[in-house]
Length: 498
Image (cartoon, rainbow, N blue to C red; front, side, top):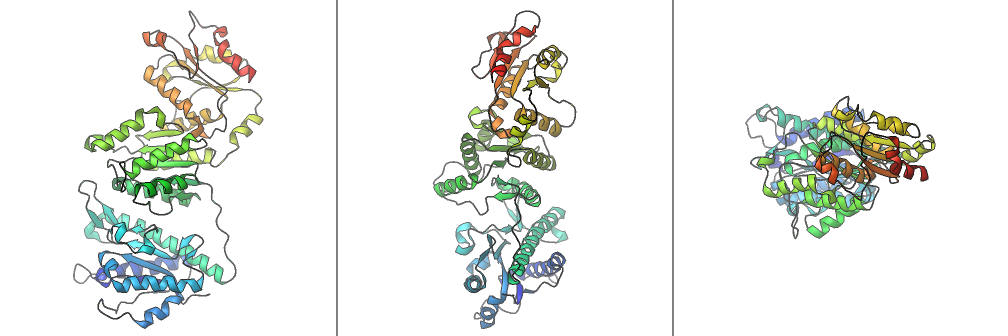
């Protein structure tokens, strides 16, 4: 059917009362902003309706009930007064009831009710029909005090609050416009085909102090054609939350975790926060293979100010090798650089190109070796490279360029080469261990098969640690005297037989 009105705004009227005399109320501003932006996005008049005349003690008007069947989309502005208002609750219930006759409350896997959270409301107090809807939160949380500040286009609140308001508003307006366009197409018998997704990414929920950065990452991924999960709020009961996260992760090939200074909310009947829980379940998912994780620690992360539980979690992330399968920790990188890195990673990974490694192998008959070394060894490693080059394609690390470019080249080599040989020269034991850990995480770099061979070549200068070095994870080559190509035989013989 064709709708009489595009949008009905349901709200508690006290929320449209301006704190400063002579100014326009919050709801009136939202209405006006939506009117203009939707008309810009749709290219035609936007029919937005709310009833500014009704008061909190009025009887629910028949005219509201009669008009709701002709409404395409409901915008519910949640606040403490909204959840206590029988009138607001009835508007929601009547709209959902009427939607049954107009195609249902959900179309194209989207709810026709948009939950705008003006003032924070505990999940258990929100209307039952909106608890599973992802809201548009028009407030910010101050990291130090934990206090909430509502967002609006008001100079008094400062530039950051205004910037966040318009960011949230644009997300809301664009999502409403997309749904209205779909409904219009369906009414005309020309239902738009759903956009083809480039892949599905799990962007983990975060603590409040980094939520805006998480939302920015999500926004970029959606804009580049990726589907982002979770697509509804996490349950606040431990077992339910774990079950839901597992189901969502099962649909993905990559998860993104933004680590903040705060520990995060701990679900009922759970001992760990949702931040820790999601990471542990992503580690569990990675153990099954064909799954990668990116963990970003913002450059302004202040560990000294973090609580003990968060410091312990971060230390575990950085040191516990059992959590590293398919994972990569990115630090000292800005948000914009991390988003660029993430998009490049997705474009190059098995998520976007699942047959990349196989195709590469078919087009190159020579086995390829990634000869990993420290930048200080770039000259000393040349005899080893020359010896291997007689029979194999040999790649060296890239050291020139910015950090993101260097990292991308490193990951590409890990994802594509048939074997890896670590040249253990100028690097210390910690450097060697980090390279060995990376070789254990190669499933996260788009590989579909393990490396044919991995090795460690013990090079000068001689140290006690090098003489004592042993591992079951790689072929160890510890030659005596000057380098000779025969020293590489234990490693290359494995490649020849593969």
